[in-house]
Image 1 (tube, one colour):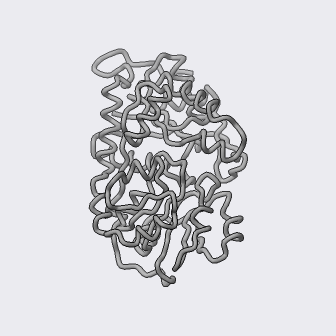
Image 2 (cartoon, helix red, strand yellow; image 1 turned 120 degrees about the vertical axis):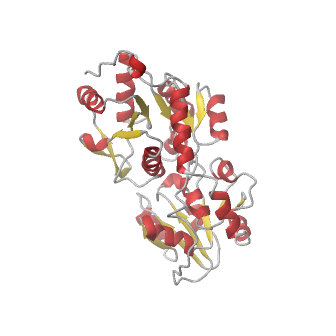
Image 3 (tube, helix red, strand yellow; image 1 turned 30 degrees about the horizontal axis):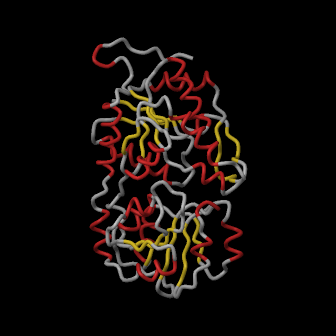
Length: 347
């Protein structure tokens, strides 16, 4: 089986969508499924206004059709609602081909953080985008329920995973005053990092990641340590060396970094909002409090081993299997299987 994923988020971007899709494809190989990706790398791009590190594609219908024809997929999944996602959606709709979508980003809250656009208008546009999808995949039961309540049809659960071979406890010393409070993610306004950096905490605050707000935050908070983007073992070492993972975002649908931290034996401090609440729930691996400072101090007393055991239940193989099973269950496999007439992928 070959699945084509259309995504506006791709390398060299560093975010949860890119990591999720990459890990999904790797895990699917063991299940006999091949993933191909239709990404901005195939098109001219321009810098996204207010976020120049993100490049938006300028896809043309003929080019989209050619790339899909070359991929000859058995199923098409649209991961993002950007220019590529819109063009592939149009392609499928014009040819009456089934497709699935996924909901990764709470755009209404992201847009509201940057400009005065009513959330209701963004939610209406998102419902329209996902409306024809055979399955709208959501990361958590709470998000799935919310989407259904907001009028999204055919919502299914697609859980995430974590690479426990990479993220696990290890003896690392950052040589910084303890305790070390760590935050990892995109350094942008919607991540609410000021709520973390404003806290009166002992030890050291460390921020890993890059983004449009980094320069301003570095100047405003000279006592915090900004390490920029980190990957692989270097990132895993930083997780393992910290004492508490602080997640101040109130807009994330899941927060893949939460699982990476927990797998590293790092307890979580966060607000009791969707994302951390959906991942952690009542498990004794994090402290969720409207007073983030209280949450940070409470997290210091949490068992690191409990965090590791909690994260072990989230595997990328299980995530890939749920993704593939959903596609088959909703009949989103294109014509041409089991001897049926092969679809004509044309412009």
